[in-house]
Image (cartoon, rainbow, N blue to C red; front, side):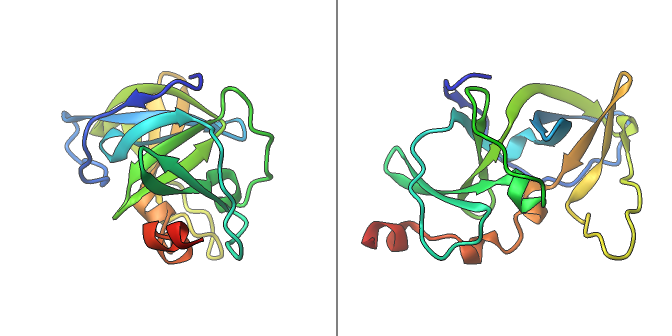
Length: 173
């Protein structure tokens, strides 16, 4: 997807549906060569990377804030949040604006497509060991021969709200 903006529908729950016949839509995106998916109902819009204003004393994965139609939106680099190496932003790099108690933008390498998955297409996340927190992984979505790592974006961004500047703090600077 290029730097154009795409407006998407309103949010809902991110829990994986256990009913095998009910279909759920996921927005898929790439990070470090792997494909991930988030419940489309959490997505507000998709934008190209614009001018991100850095905010001092933030964790490295909080890249700063953007002004989106008068709203200050914190920007989280998902590569860094997930402990992956940072990558240069390209024309394919996107900011997915999600609604998790407040609007937050997450930077991903590229956006792929919206897919429909039935409950039967979603397999449980494999155990990763005692020292690995994968509580944000909803499951593995099976699409043909490929697997998509389905994440609960609310759980993936736990703690981010406290670390991100809010509208008032950002406008005071």
